[in-house]
Amino acid sequence: MATKQAITPLPDESSEESGPSKEEVFEVLSNRRRRQTLHYLLQKDDETATKREVSRQLAAWENDEPIDMVSSSERKRVYIALHQTHLPKLADAGLVDYDASQGTITLTDACHDLDVYLDVVPENELSWSQFYLGLGGLCLALTALAGLGLVPFDGVPGLAWAGLFAVAVTVAGGVHYLRDNQHQLGVDAEPPLLGEGE
Image 1 (tube, rainbow, N blue to C red):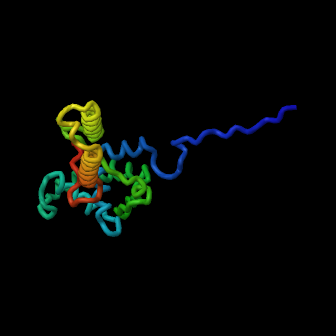
Image 2: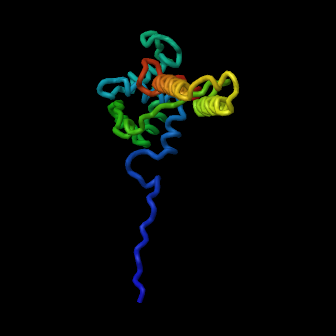
Image 3: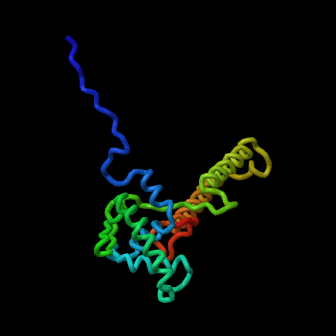
C-alpha cells in the first residue's frame, strides 16, 4: 500500500508577515502627502510627531513657504486629509503607529525594512538602466574596434582599455549612488520631488 506524502505549499508573498506587501507599499507611496509624512518622520530623532506638526510642515512644503508663514486654512486642509485618509492608510500598511485620539504618529520597524528610495526620471532624461546599457555598448564597441586592429584603437594596450572601462563604470556608479541618495526618503531637509497628486 502506497503511503501518502504531505505536499508543502510554496511560500506565498502575500502570506508573509514581515511587513506590507509590494502592492501596499506602491499604493502608499503613490501619494505625495504620504511620502512627505514618512520623509518628515524619518528626519526626527524619535521618529514621532503630532498630526499638527506634520500638517504644518506638509503645508509649508506644498505652498513653498517657511513653516511660520503657513496660514491656518492651509494647515487645516492638510490636517483633515491626513486625519481622514493618509494616516489611516499608512497605519493599515503597518508603516506607522497612528493614535487618532492623541494625534501622534510614530514610524514602525516595517518602514525601516523598506529602505525606500524612488528613482525619478525627469522627462527627456535617460533612466539609469538605459545609461548603463549605453555605457556597456560603448565599451563593447571600443573593444571590438581594438580587436579588429583599426587605427588608432590598435595602438592602445589592452590594460589601458581595461583601466579606462573600470574608471568609466566606477564614476558612473558613484554618480548613480549620489543621485539615489538625493531621492531617498528622510535624507535631505526637503522631500524628493516625485510628481504631483495629493
